[in-house]
Image (cartoon, rainbow, N blue to C red; front, side):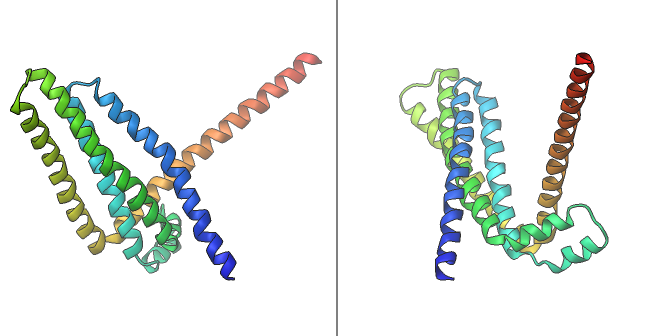
Length: 204
């Protein structure tokens, strides 16, 4: 039993590392793209990254704070997303780790890097020089940091006080995405079957 209990965290840690690598690369490409964008568009992208981090931090905490009971009641009434919500709550530790430790932390790091890229673009736009450069960089970085910390504090308060609707929202999003993927997979399989049937008919 001890060997199995050790293997499970090890497998999960390796899975987290495997997820972090492509996610980090995906977010990092957004910061590279910021160097080619106007500063105001870059600022919007940075704020979106901050909001993504805040939302996933909220979801991780909500999954840990939520209880299964209301979702079982919803599932009995066949409310959309209730069954997925139960899965999220039952795997709260893993969900919290992925959402808060992986996506939330990556978003936090990259929002800081993005803020620096935005400040560089703004300096080029207004031809800043001397101490103006340092001032612009400090102001933008401080603004993004303050927004990140403030929004995360608000988000955590909401997640603790109202975890059920947050988990249900995430479950419904998961349900919708999985339904769309399943539907697209069925369409592809139908098309492949039709093409095979057409080829057979052509041979005859």
